[in-house]
Length: 156
Image (cartoon, rainbow, N blue to C red; front, side, top):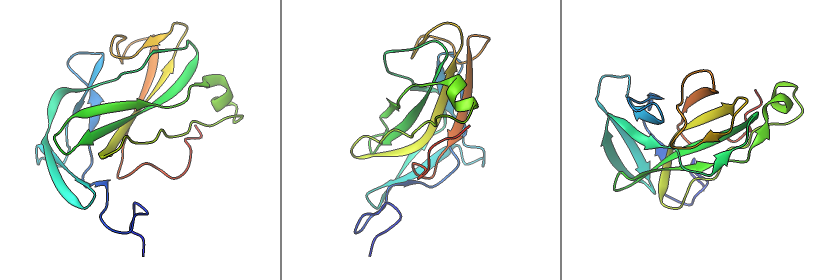
């Protein structure tokens, strides 16, 4: 019998709403769990872990994202509370809007739990992960709180 992670046993899931939002440093994101618990509980291979809510915990890492393209950055956390991001495949934003293409969710790195995602739609200029602000007129940013990586692509 398989569990929710399609593994024989154990499970890797986020057990609370992450509350991803723009950080105090505008090129980073924070975890601000909205239930008042001041922290996030998650499981990796059936064992539970906890990370306290804090500012500037998430730094997007990747090469430069092409102007006028969209990309999903999967936010993952390890058992030792190391937060990493995985960039998905870039897709021309106009193709997504027109319904011609979709954004696929990246794969989580080994031994981490996906806790959220950040979609970045770059404007007329390239987006440089970890450097370009996640606010303002140069990008449009959408935050997703995840239980696990969704099984269907992002269509809009």
